[in-house]
Image (cartoon, rainbow over all chains, first blue to last red; front, side):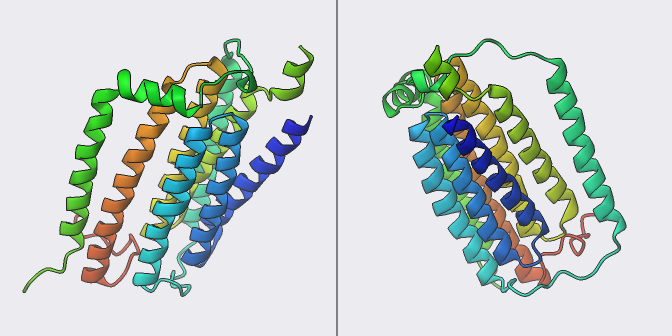
Length: 166
Length: 107
């Protein structure tokens, strides 16, 4: 019973904060609500007994990525409500198409069926030991590839953001 | 049995939650004109997929899904770094992050 209550609190927190991310006028508030959303997803990971990913999620998303976003918003001086008023038609179309996508996905899930499950509390799938052994044996090559990806992304970011000489 | 009933939430709850989060992300990409907020909505979609993968991994007792989530996080970090660098360079050229201004590549 307790875990159900925690699940509903965390879910409503993540859904409400996700809606605020979309509908906030000020980009700074959007970034803040996204941090709230990420922290609630961190709680979901803990509920699913995935400790390693929960900590990685908190460090990478709420730490690194959101600091990068916040830094860019402040660097570009977007903290005023600078979005010009546009016609409401595209917004209505966006809401309708988002709702229709939700409807289609839920209907597709409704017609399917889930395989039998084991309780996440009774397994150790998310422990550092299990995930670490998987990463360093079965997924060693992709893991090494990610370092190349990071080098490429880092060099690309520096080259793109560098001031062009005239 | 008592313990199972007490602890395990049905997995379909996680499916519904991540579907709603994904739809909110898609709606945000279509709804907003600010490129930074569009990037944030893409992060939201990636996170909903991560949550789904972790739930399937945890409920099936297999760690492979969590390794995939780890790689998705790596790719998301690289994507955000490059995306924000592009955004800064665009802002330097047109002094705006409104995607309606960026119509030069339009045919």
